[in-house]
Amino acid sequence: MNQEQQDIIFMREALNQAHNAWALGEVPVGAVLVRDGQLVATGFNQPIGNHDPTAHAEIQALRTAAHLLGNYRLPGCTLYVTLEPCMMCVGAMLHARLARVVFGAYDPKTGAAGSVVNLFAEKQLNHQTEIVGGILADECGQVLKEFFAARRTSQARAAAGLFTDLSGDGVANG
Image (tube, rainbow, N blue to C red; front, side, top):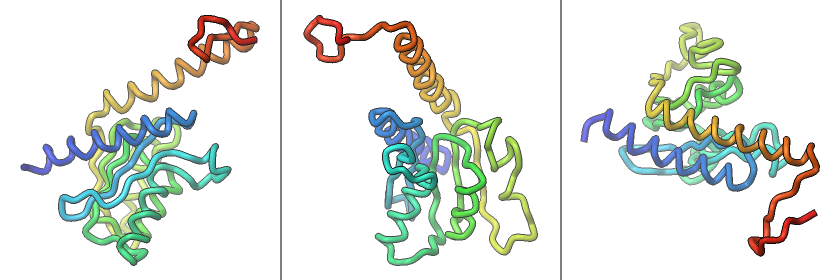
């Protein structure tokens, strides 16, 4: 299997993690960390539920991998994430000494891998990480679009005083 095929397979795994975040009402971003072609750790956004602004998908996967591998450095590892990482996450990735970061959708508001800034391109930093963007970008972006559209619809219904049948019994709750 070539690198492009492997990137697609693991990005699909990251998309599965994004759906876990959505199921909890979190922004659907997922991440997986891989070493030597083997899945080591997964993560998905949980800042709301964990009351933790650092609980991004990438950080969750990095923490789990570091614990499992017994090292805060993760050389030779690749992190796959469905959305271009923010500045905080890029900093953690660089400190972890990741070999590669592969992301799906670009983030024009907070992306720190080229959209707003590219922290990976800073040659003054003592570690360089390869980045690859746009893998399954349409699918990754679509999950985010659908999540925010559903949230806007739900908020509009709440604002209008409309309630949906959450129980499945055909009776609107209210």
